[in-house]
Image 1 (cartoon, rainbow, N blue to C red):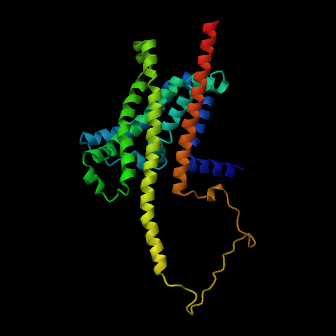
Image 2 (image 1 turned 90 degrees about the vertical axis):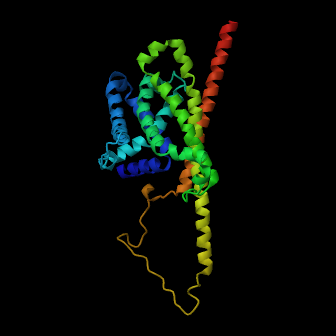
Image 3 (image 1 turned 90 degrees about the horizontal axis):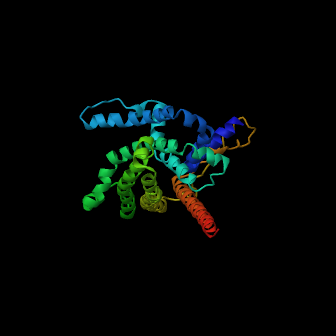
Amino acid sequence: MIKVLIDLLTFLRTTVPLLFCVAVFALLFIWLAKSIKKYYYIYYTLFAIPFLMVVVPSLLRIFGVETSFNFTRIPVLGEILRDYIHMASLGHPLLIIIMYMGALDVKNTYVKRLMSIRKEISILSGFPILTHSWIRVMNNFPEALKYFTDHAEFMENPRVTSALGAGITNTVLVLGIVMLVLFFILWITSFDTVHKRLGGIRWKKIQRWSYALYALLFIHAMGLQVGRMVSSAATTKPQTEVVAKAQETRPAQGGGGERTQATPQAQGGHGGRTPSKGLADIKVNNTAKQWISVSSLLLIYGSYLILRVRKAGKKGKKKGISITA
């Protein structure tokens, strides 16, 4: 039973990573709500440590301090850091949870528990998101900018398989800088000291920009997926054509006097029966995973939009009733 559960969780983690991480972190936050509220500084520290592990060595290299030590090469810790850096594993799910809080019914017990630590979750989300952004800016942004500043040279790179795919990918990567600036402003205002200095009215006006952030986040995530799919399709097509031509020129076997022998199947200790396959044995190819990722984004942001519009409509009706009364 435990093995089946582990196989199921592993399958979901690798097949629908975004939905899986959103569900897992939502349940964790509901369960740990009181603890996070009371010991928020411990959680902030735990989330800040991986940020420092990634950013500090990178800063040292910028200032000419070369170091061969890399935390990501340490077993187990390296896996944790890679998941921490990867937006779909931590940063994006946390933002989705924060986003949905504003669209769900606050009277619901579980939503109420999440709302009680919305500020804390917002601050926690900043550490992995800023880490991811740092890596993107240092490693991907210069190349993405080159697509626009020196397009001809960029397209000569043999790794570029599709002009359309490269255009979509690099556009949303550059757009990520706008998203980073907007997120940083919203993140800073989540801290009590900044909130108090701004005052309630100014703070609320700034927080309304979160809707623009959610829209940009959807465009950014969807653009990366679509750009990758277009580029992958352009790469796969020539390979398919080469394989097809090779099969056409391959001589037919079995009919030219050569006798083909059937290879007997190896039998294990199952009395000749084929062992039953579990979820761990199901392999989902990259194309299917890409379509699943696109579908997940449409499901998450589409349902959020419906819920948000519905909630705004109900709020408007209540205001109308109170005015007439």
